[in-house]
Image (cartoon, rainbow, N blue to C red; front, side):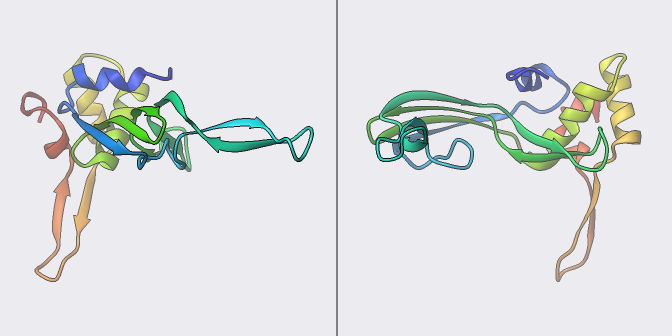
Length: 155
C-alpha cells in the first residue's frame, strides 16, 4: 500500500473524514515525537542525535499494523501533514468518526475485497464484522460500526 493510499477513503463508500486544523506552538506529534531531525553529534563522532526542527514539513501516513493474520488490522495513528516554522506549527489531520473502527474496516475493504462497491461492503460485513458490545452502567449495547462509518447508500 502506498504512502498516500488512505486518501482513497474520501471517494469510497465510507463517510468522508473531517479535516482538523491546528495552528499554534509546536504541540502535535509526527506521530510519536514532536517534529525533529537527525544531525551529527559533535560530542560523539560517528553518532547521530535528534534536534527539534526549525523549519520543515512532515507527512505522516496512516499508522496501522497487522496482528495475528494478514487481515487482522490494528489502527495506530491518524494521517497528518505538519509544517513547522521555528516554534510554531500548522498541522492538518484527517479524522473520521470512530477512527479505529473506520480505518480498520477501510483497510480491509481496500486490501482484501474485490467486486463492485456493494459486493466489497458485503464481504467486509461478513468476513470482517464490526459488531462490538459497549458496556455501561445503564446496560450493554451491541453496536454495528458499519452503520456509523458507511454512507447511507451502503448500509
